[in-house]
Length: 367
Image (cartoon, rainbow, N blue to C red; front, side):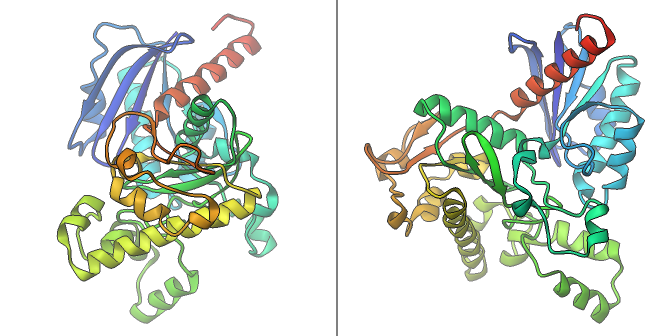
């Protein structure tokens, strides 16, 4: 079976076609500066390769959809229902579903939702202290970047020959961390929405909701006005005054505000490593991935500085040099620190393959 896996970013569209279950790449491409996803999807080149199904890395559709599902009206309705919780992400995927249905009619579409990996979180880590009726409406911690954290868990286990007590740090324009014990997610920083947790490039991190209510009442802002401000002008951009909140731009700016924004980000990462070590009852590995985590030696060093009491050490030469998946801590260090490339598309393809295989077996036919 040939799966088309599009990875839809805020301004880009990466895609590849994988033959499953061999996981052999048959075609791939990337479109930049995307403003119209319908047009971008129409430009996808399959290089003459037949597409049997489309697998999307979907984000948020509430409590009924924490796994992988063939897209039907129920999935679409749930994506629309939770659009206010993930406006940037769900809007893109709703558009993509419509566009693929038009471009490739009859080809099944599978949605692999990001909270799937976090379904193993215990209730005491997942639930908020909100009124009981809110829980019935699906207000709880879901967690996101699940495909990335799942891939990192498997890659670290492969490199170390065991499944350690691991903190996975997916740091980029969108950032989250995950405590992984025995290959299973037991806690993560993002909660009900991708807005929460660490500061992102333009999205705020954890925030006292009464601060939001205070500002709404003080200025007479509508829900949509606040949503736009916190999604597009918060996070590192809001702290630094640097539009877009890209860490590279913050480092280049060198202003007091930009420096403080980076300090806030590093502090949150460092604090969370300690908290997750406590949650797991120990710490054996830290993996940095994402555009920042994989590529910024300076940020990795800053995030680990001061954690020597946990056995976290960085080898300056290894950290500053080298390419590809690698260990950047000294030999024999109590905690292994790694810099890794993630592969969300591979996890999405595996999930979609299993989903389609199960659906075909249930229907009494081969996939």
